[in-house]
Amino acid sequence: NAGVTQTPKFRVLKTGQSMTLLCAQDMNHEYMYWYRQDPGMGLRLIHYSVGEGTTAKGEVPDGYNVSRLKKQNFLLGLESAAPSQTSVYFCASSRDGGSYEQYFGPGTRLTVT
Amino acid sequence: QQQVKQSPQSLIVQKGGISIINCAYENTAFDYFPWYQQFPGKGPALLIAIRPDVSEKKEGRFTISFNKSAKQFSLHIMDSQPGDSATYFCAASSDTGRRALTFGSGTRLQVQP
Image (tube, rainbow over the protein chains, first blue to last red):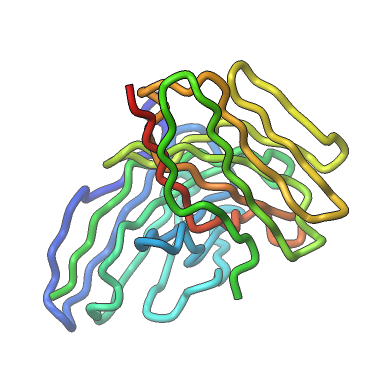
């Protein structure tokens, strides 16, 4: 099993450009999460999904959109990138609401210039 | 509002010493308290976790101490090794929060040989 994978690993965008980050898991997990990690701030929740076709906002959702069309994939979109979105993005998944452990992907380092 | 406060920000320990990292939380709905370990360029990985019905949990050299009345918990690393050098995050989650993790700001641990 590959676990949780993220594509791409690195990306540089110019202000105003758009992009989509892909998260895929092969563990048949129901719950999936997107976090961003910034220096000195830990990880903060952007959006999450509790099942195929569902999404919900987290702590810092502004400027991001998500979709969960397939159970194994969770996409994070930036419609108009801003320098404030320069960060490392992590995707995580967990089996369901009764399972507490989250499994994290390797991250995507995004720089917006 | 930072719901999980972590200290210290950085920690230097000699090989064989004890590393102690502290966290405090505010939300009394939290009922799961994990610690994650993160190496540079990698995603966080679950190290050890505790539920509030016990005051201590030990796994090998790693121990969580939990004080429900004080809303505090801590990670103790006994016999610290250079391979333990990493960033450690405390976190908390609740059922009402759909098990999304609220992270502390992280502690960079350096174990000197």
